[in-house]
Image 1 (cartoon, rainbow, N blue to C red):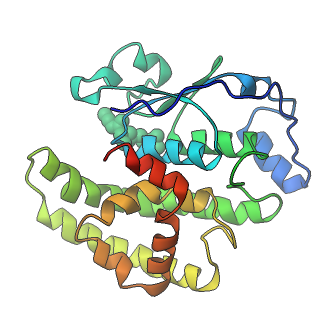
Image 2 (cartoon, rainbow, N blue to C red):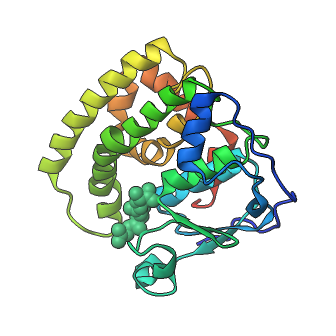
Length: 252
Ligand SMILES: N[C@@H](CCC(=O)N[C@@H](CS)C(=O)NCC(=O)O)C(=O)O
């Protein structure tokens, strides 16, 4: 497991702007309050595994935001994620976990949203102010509830099981390829109308897909993406981002 980076975030405070009412509502729901984020001056620590797709989601977000952070490898092969002290960070015993001062988070998508809303003035915006944030949220939910379950299952069967010497369940592959095809038909329609899932610009709605797409591109499932022109162009675009290349480089 590689050590990605370490440094202190170079800011003393951040005034949190949330002008439009809808955005303010979403932000308030998600992120504490609207007082200055004093925590943001503190070191960001990510506990995870470079091979874990959920960890990669958080790393991609930090690189897009050009934030410095400390990566603390969790040795999943010996079950470190199922024991203390890791369980104090995530009682569900899954990576990644995030720490910044006394703030402790788990669930990769909650972590990326904290980062994107908290560091609006750094790197790629990743969230869209105002009403469009609601559309972006729809596509983040689509990723989590429609795309991820089938894409993760296919990557487990076709990428990780062979890596661990476990036989692939071909019936599960067939079933989930059919499911993924249906999801990607909907993506094809969406991407025919909108360059990115959340709107005209790259956002968290796209970023959240990167780890599973990147895995799928190394399996027979690639054909499901390649056969849909708008999906295929979108995949080529988002997987060629510099921030994603930094995540992938760690595993080379
Ligand atoms: N919904 C969680 C999923 C986390 C997750 O499934 N992590 C995997 C690695 S990608 C893990 O820790 N698996 C070990 C286990 O579930 O015991 C997130 O997005 O953070």
